[in-house]
Image 1 (cartoon, helix red, strand yellow):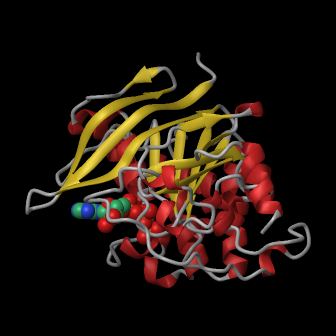
Image 2 (image 1 turned 180 degrees about the vertical axis):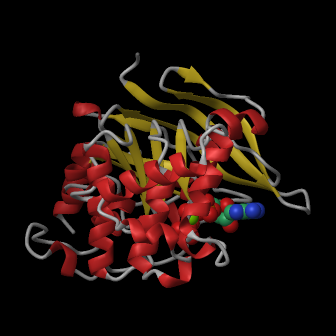
Length: 335
Ligand SMILES: Nc1ncnc2c1ncn2[C@@H]1O[C@H](COP(=O)(O)OP(=O)(O)OP(=O)(O)O)[C@@H](O)[C@H]1O
Ligand SMILES: [Mg+2]
């Protein structure tokens, strides 16, 4: 068995609008998540985080189209599989995806246990209702949710409880990869912490083998994931350990996302982030050069004319910039 739970190589996907326009939302993205590890994906609204999540599940429906790359889950290549097979043999078991705002999309007329029965009907149709209830009860209690929740309607649960319930439903079949898309964004700080604690404990106890946590708040990922990937306009601009990405970001965009933190160890959560001036480029017609050039404080003439490759530096860190690590550090020192 491979130690790599999810491997994505050069994945490129696009939306084709009803006017026939192409929107390049995921551009040559490669990533790897090993057994017991978690990856955070951060970036502004519209940078392609959710599209990447949909794309790496191999589950394509118009207007989203696959254009290239490979996806392997625990050694099994799922590239090019038809959506029906993906639904039957990948989703829920290999990859569990918790979509953005999933907790608000629960059908209000059904009890929580009914959502769990649906999961079993799709993947283990021979299980009886009693068996499903017993498994669900045991699992909910293990993850710190009272069994009474199973008999409740979504509207009877608080926001935090609803989100933790959605997570529990999603991982009840112990997926290889869990993708949580902005799982804590709509919650108050206390509920946020509980959701994060639950996700970490699911990982630590082996209920999920690996995790991708998507957020627009880069600092939030520190203490939550092992590694962080920063996306900008459909591309990876930086990949590093969580500590490096948060406390020592190299790419000017990652730095912008971290705002003006000077002494990060103290009060990291209290620091208000400064917005990066300007807006991301239109993905219908992305710039020929660096996609961040127009907003970059350190832009050089070459940046706007030449596409920029990801470069790898010591420790397996990567970033997408024509400036060397030394040049960037020098530039940051001078403000
Ligand atoms: N169904 C669609 N049809 C056409 N374009 C789309 C569609 N869904 C998303 N897009 C475009 O694809 C790009 C990436 O969107 P995506 O939703 O993946 O971003 P995101 O990083 O998840 O943003 P957010 O933080 O707001 O959730 C955006 O430019 C968006 O406008
Ligand atoms: Mg999104």
